[in-house]
Image (cartoon, rainbow, N blue to C red):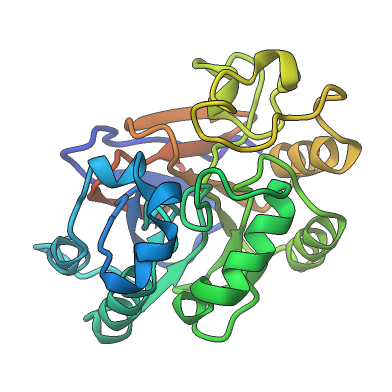
Length: 288
């Protein structure tokens, strides 16, 4: 179903997407890759694991103004991962307080840095589970960190954690279940979803066919396990196929690349928000 049209697509302006599936407008404020490095004495035991990412601090206090913004209030704020550069107790406490007291409702999904202390042993899947449970849970407001859904202004928002570049079977099943009702939906993830012709590197998309150990340039820098030799698994392939073929999924919002981008594929949009700033996405009724 061809239903996408972008009226404006730049980091400085709101992006407007029209769809005949919508009955009322919905404004989403998107925030990605804040990379806050707020820490205190409680982080001392982990300094050897946080030292590289701590070189680029971006105070969480600045996030308040980005969420509040100016002009038309949003219906919902979506935080699309890498809010933190590593999972410090101070960072989570500050971020939780900011989200709890924000003037608009906020929803969060994790990025690959939010749960990663570089150099700690273990698979990315295990480290994500461990540090989500130890630190990140307050950011979710009681929702399931791997996947949750809610409806705002007639649009179903689907927040899915793809921060390991891999999708778990239970995530795929939940996404299929939530899309089955036919309501117009938007998928919020950290890592953009691959489609044929997507520009950029292997490291910038979930489900890219050439994602594998041979094309993993950062595993030593990030001090983590290397991506598997076998490449993309069948569940992640099925996820990519579902995303681009579900007729009621209007599009995807993501972060990770730190650069604004807007693309369309199969009548859907993918908007990638720039790092350290907010960007409004307006979903409006109409044919464009």
